[in-house]
Length: 128
Image (cartoon, rainbow, N blue to C red; front, side, top):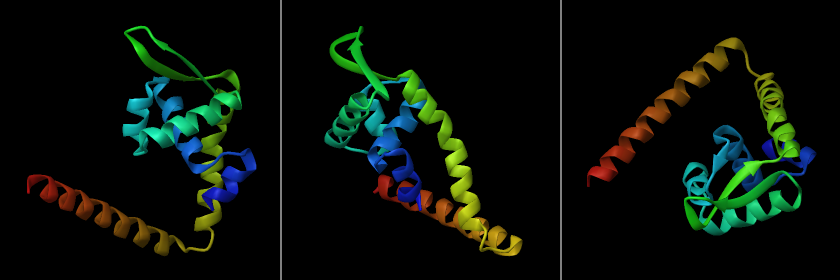
């Protein structure tokens, strides 16, 4: 479903994740962007290069680190970023249209339980 909507704006999943992270933060280094998107350096670099080439992101030198770079949205990138919530809402509506209100409520409860359990598993793994 996400790919269908992303294809409509010509973005791959890594590009969308990077665009969303930069849009939310305003300015990000590639390292921090990788941490926030759970993508490795190579994937961030490729996504950034693609978004820069399409005019959605701009890179500049980090004034506090001569070797570092900073990523920002361009005006065009900000326009695409601003369309993401509407796209997500449309995707949500399309997906949930086949569920009753009770089904939707139950699904949300189950997903919250799963999230809570996974956090506990991660905490237990970190403690080991």
